[in-house]
Length: 227
Ligand code: C5P
Image 1: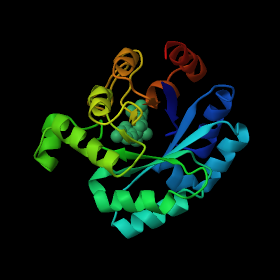
Image 2: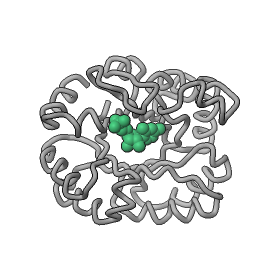
Image 3: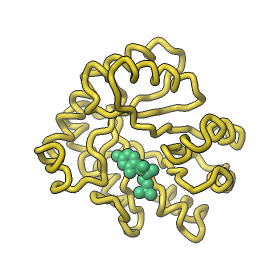
Image 4: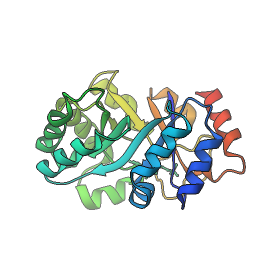
């Protein structure tokens, strides 16, 4: 299991200083909406300068018409990043289009499909999708698998079921991790490290429990020892 830390701090300087303090760890860093909209490609090059071995997950959750998604994926794959994601609900044509467009690029980044956001509980989910999370997430994951994506973003509770329904090497990345039972904040389906392990999760994404802790470096050390 790999640890991916969400760089969701309010300024570039704070994100960079967090990354510097974690320079010697074997970790993934997640650059999401907030950081990428504000800092663009600069944050990626600065992170790679700190440690070229840092792996970067660009979490922009693309959702648009197939042609626009394929164009965006093509641009993204030119960046110095190792993984990005698209919404599975953007459709089969869009997913296939993205994979076709980047498949013959050298060292292409991994592509994950977002299944059901971990901030949904069944009630809020039903309001939009008229279905339950369990049913939809496995259906979404199978579609992503058929379209040859590398894996999915899901909650820790769905990881094992998704692997059983696709194949064990189909990657799962799970946000909503509260390693030592911290506050869930806006996340509804939170899980701790044991649940993530039991469900064969490949990547855990952790933001606030690390960057809001009094000693992020120590928290990361504690997590890495357990995974
Ligand atoms: O602070 P916290 O650990 O809740 O951060 C989770 C991170 O993972 C946030 O950056 C959030 O945008 C992201 N994320 C998520 N749920 C998804 C995909 C990404 O929470 N399905």
